[in-house]
Length: 156
Ligand SMILES: [Zn+2]
Ligand SMILES: [Zn+2]
Image (tube, rainbow, N blue to C red; front, top):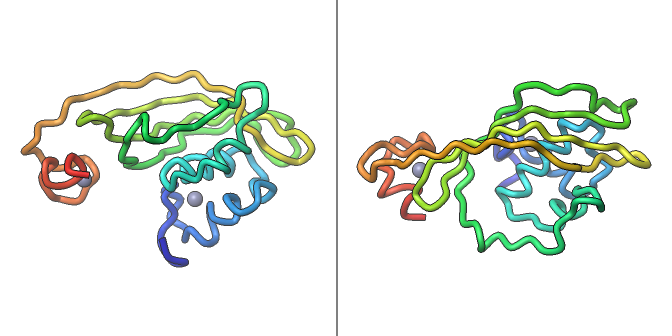
């Protein structure tokens, strides 16, 4: 990632002005949506520290082991947010993220709940639904590279 790379969260902004400031400083997420985006980006970049520290203490897992779940992240789409603004104490973000896991194309649709405490947003919990699709090895890769799946993300 360079300073001008597009942010993995799909906002269309440069990483250096989008999720990077939040990864560096939790306080920079002033809305639930900004925290949500930064957490997605943290999963893409395997930034365990931000994922853990932005997880509410009540539901935070003890360990994060990325190697248990090798995935290739393909994108985030935010559908809607309710509350989650600077002046709110809680908020919900409805989103879909797409990824590859063990040769399957997965779509995770989640409604995540966030809480704001002492000026910091935290992820509390979510209700999610995952749909999985087998990808034919010779079909074009769902990441949009234009290459065959077997030569692209399946080989990663
Ligand atoms: Zn971002
Ligand atoms: Zn690919």
